[in-house]
Length: 144
Image (cartoon, rainbow, N blue to C red):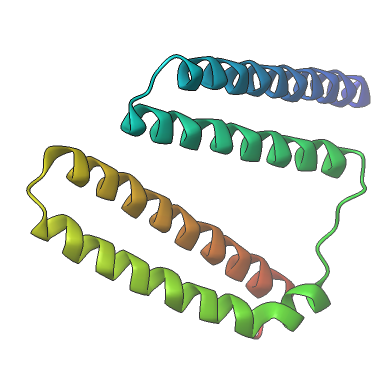
């Protein structure tokens, strides 16, 4: 009985992931329509960012599907080989964040401040991803 519930939840989960992928497809299509309907560079750029993010979301959802199928793994050796590169990347992200904060604080232009704010949030998201990879590394290599 308990196994049946797990299977049902898995099927429900997989259906939810599939629906999410379809939503991302519709989002990308709508973004294209918006971009083609305006000449405003701010709107085109920001909606283009949303479209690119939706494409990334589809890629991650596909990875989730692969993980459910058991075709995705993360071996300790893989993270060990790139550990120094991940550390270098984190330093670059910190530098970008520090610079972004300084530029944000020095700007008084409404649109520029919003664009800088977006970039800062994205850089902080990059740091979060790199920190997650470091967490994976620590879980796989508990003595690092």
